[in-house]
Length: 287
Image (spheres, one colour):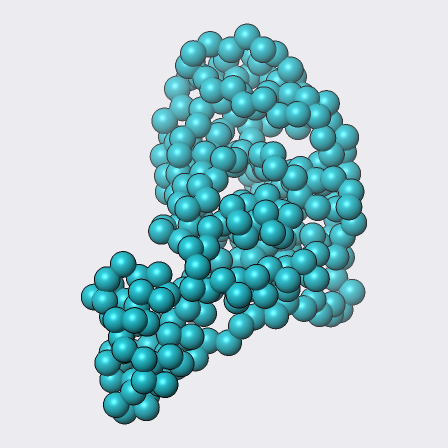
């Protein structure tokens, strides 16, 4: 996977002045867009849109040093107005684009290159499960994409679930894991305009087809799942495990992610404050 990711960085580099889209980038990478975005974030420490913005402004800085007009540079790198480019450049560099050629001030952001360094024999516990087709059934909402911290919109979604909805979910639940899960899918691809949204569902797994109109139903085809158990302080341990899956396990494993919902569940420990057992389920196939 690292070979493919570095090829994607080359692709981005060759198209910095083009109208880049996540669809085109993920298609070139051969990785579903939402998973590619997470892999990129956990490997680089920044979002894909941040990386592209930084590279464009870095190249714009070079052009300005060579004496190109601010107007030409702004439109070259996809900005709709000189004012928009000026604000972005000032926020990124700390100085105005008009000052670059006159004063020689400069800031750069080099192209990334991905490598994996294995230290200390760190291992990850996981199991591979073949699962027949099922439905995710529950309450869903479009929420902002967020890879770190507590997503307050998901918290509001959880608080909105009624007793009637909870009772129906429990009556439908008939597949492992027999827990309330948090599932994510259908992410926006227009990431260069804004970070975008995805659909988050809180619900259960079931083979039942009859569902009332108070719940949403999402069909999931039969596939293979990589399951990552983790236990420790919550939510830190869960988030660290997610980061390791995308930054350490996937790049060197014999599996690749497929375009299906990911989900997880968490069971808080009644006897330890902010301590929990969680599992993360990632849809995969062998390379």
